[in-house]
Image 1 (cartoon, rainbow, N blue to C red):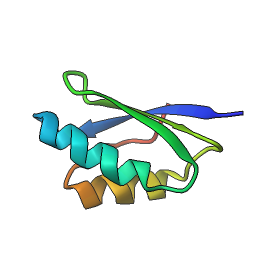
Image 2: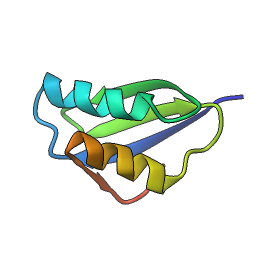
Image 3: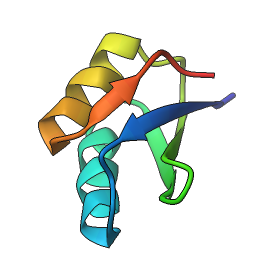
Image 4: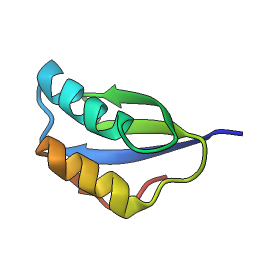
Amino acid sequence: MSVTTTYTVTGMTCQHCVQAVTSELAELPGVREVRVDLPAGAVSVTSDAPLSVDAVRAAVDEAGYELVGGGV
């Protein structure tokens, strides 16, 4: 069974931003798919099991952006 969680990420303005965030999140263990809605600043991550918010925050930080709150 997979889990999809949506996060809010600030600072993304272009396709390069989308690629950077997608690449970092895709490296987390268990991640199957990452979808970014650039205008909304929403990032949906589908994984094998729930991800730690700290792990997601670290990946988003590594890409150069900021995770706002937790996931939904």
